[in-house]
Image (cartoon, rainbow, N blue to C red; front, side, top):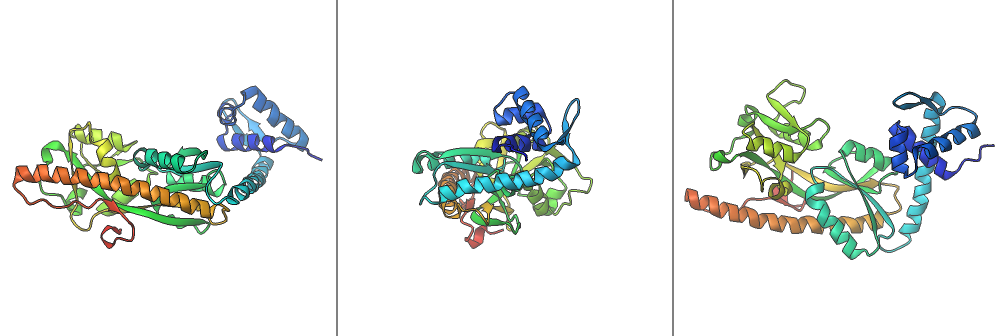
Length: 336
């Protein structure tokens, strides 16, 4: 009878997922020889090979693939036992594994972590920043407790809680400041700079412009919003960025920003977690903290927009107009 340990199963799962002894050892915080020894011992206990070992990577055998499915189920169940213990408290305690998409993380995450640490003393926060598809996968596999993403996700196994809506703004060279705002038809004829394939923000921008990503067009890709804005500053094209990114991404770039005429492109940001999670009550509390952080950011951005409006309208001798930014998702003016 095999007598393997839970630690061995976690080592196996890491190696099965990463396909590389070095990276798996780093993830598990052990040496590569120690990991190799643990995997070999596990294989000896099972009486069969779990991996095909190559010069650069390792692959699961047929048995290893079937074994990995069961191991992930076991580890998820074990983690849920810990969740049950945490759920016995009235507020979040212990470990919180939270995922977040790259077009939100740099702008909202510092406030979220600061507020959570202040409100819930001793909360051990682990952050994972990656694309939506990876966050959903890791959430379903039990490697995350919750994630902050653009909604909807439309996964039956996940709960979605809308937090706030925000508009997208057009970023163009500074010499274009004060010029008429292009409509979506005109935008389709411009050189549009977008995030790489896989980013949901790219898909949202293409949808607003009514551009099919499969069609050959004058599109250029960037790896981050910072890269896109700097490309605009260099005169390469124009781009769209979310409202929350404006203050950070444009402060050192020679660009101008302007909102679109109605209908304005927008997105809804929310939190997701497994419907079966015992931490639902605690995650709802955390969602309120995230919403409050977004509200505070919105107030800051509103004041920045008003100041920019007054400056620009003073030069152009136009009446000031309020620029809507991002707000509550139940505000009809900010819905998608």
